Amino acid sequence: MATEQNNLPAIIAHCKEYGFIFPSSEVYDGLSAVYDYGQWGVELKKNIKDLWWKSMVYMNENIVGIDSAIFMHPTIWKASGHVDNFSDPMIDNLDSKKRYRVDHLIEGFVEEMSEKGKEILAKMDALLAADDFAGLKQLIVDNQMKCAVSGTCNWTDVRQFNLMFSTQVGSVAEESDTIYLRPETAQGIFVNFLNVQKTGRMKIPFGIAQIGKAFRNEIVARGFIFRMREFEQMEMQFFVRPGTQKEWYEHWKNVRMNWHLSLFPPLEGREAKYRFHDHVKLAHYADAACDIEFDFPMGFKELEGIHSRTDFDLTQHQLYSKKKMQYFDNDIDEATGKPYGNYIPYVVETSVGLDRTILSALAHAYQEEDLSTPEKQDSRVVLKFPIKIAPIKLAVLPLMKKDGLAEIAKDLMNECRDSFLCFYEEKDSIGKRYRRMDALGTPFCVTVDHQTKEDGTVTIRYRDSMEQERVLLSDVKGIVLNALHK
RNA sequence: GCGGAAGUCGUAUAGUGGCUAUUACCUCAGCCUUCCAAGCUGAUGACGACAGUUCGAUUCUGUUCUUCCGCUCCA
Image: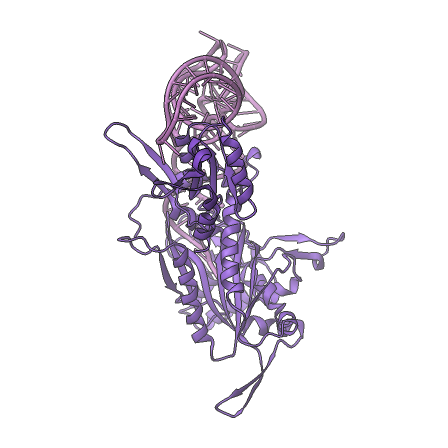
């Protein structure tokens, strides 16, 4: 359980005030559950993306990346099951305010019936197939199906909630021209499975990684950037020989958990911020699934999903596209002494929400520290980002504008700027500038003073400890690079 | 989508059916100072939006948008 208070409102305000994340279209009152990344948020996002990409693609010779289009052939979403599963007719009870999936309500109703039940189910299937919502409501009312909570038959009309955004391609608005914005990035990998396997001469087991936007028309989108209508996923589909999926599933569970832990190691004396949550009820495509959950300000919530998707997706695409999705495995099966031969690979998926990872980083890093002494009340807000994801790595601050200190500082900026993002500031007192950098999460500040002109040293000040030490001006770039690559 | 609550400068706040809408921090310009939010002078900037009632609405009413809390949903 989270023992700290929910500081999400403070984080949201901080993100806006310091240029990390703004409500989208704010001058027009905003757009529900859509946010824009500002000048520092975009750096944070980019750094996290790079870390993930490096750990998945660069560190594994059998994993390559792609970037597939957001627009895809409409049949893909029929094959994947999204057209059917994403658009269930729903009905609300007006007294209890409970919402039901119509098919669940009716199936629950007929559960204890025999002959009459089958009759009703047959009717329901026919009505569902015909998209006859009025008929479905009539069926519910005629049979006096009651809400389990309120016990009444006071129902709204049957409504359909399609969680996929649609748009038109081409000038003629016929149904065949309706395409969907992808609700997940995975299908872009599955439909390119053979392209990548063949052109990359990939041998199983191998993986395809992708970072990209996906869109879901959520009925309820809440929790700042936790659940947005437009969001970004970082995911990898790992293709394996059937029968080995279990061990690969366990392998990726561990690898992915360790990635999160390496980014945010557990603080001493504190409970772990991450945990696994195994799915008991599995989705239609999976034979094993779990979430990596993070202790967000609003409690433990899903950050990443690890799913063993079997051969469901590739089989479906083979069925709908009428193209073979199989792989020829030359390795020798010890049981038979012959090659494994043709098969449709099984898939283990790791899929992490980029925006959620950003929120987890913010939640982890955001701290209000009391620095009061007996003489003076004082406090600071500091973002303790790991150096690798900090938007600005180094702030260069001349103690004052005069006496040529600014020139030395600017020379240092020019030396460092092609290696990492630097920030230059000469306004206000040095203490104020340090605190401003704390609020942005900048790990290092160096101050150029008069002594610099004499002996070529500067003060380096550390964000987390607030300690300062004297180092050679010529060493500064190396110190930052060293910390960055540790 | 349902129920509840709330929207005042960038942030946090005060207040009002009627005078130039309060204060602090922030931001900007200048002076002074120079190693952890110093000081002085000045400046920018807000009643979420649209209607209605009214001589007059930021204030009352309605609608709408957005946010938060709870439900619901979560392939």
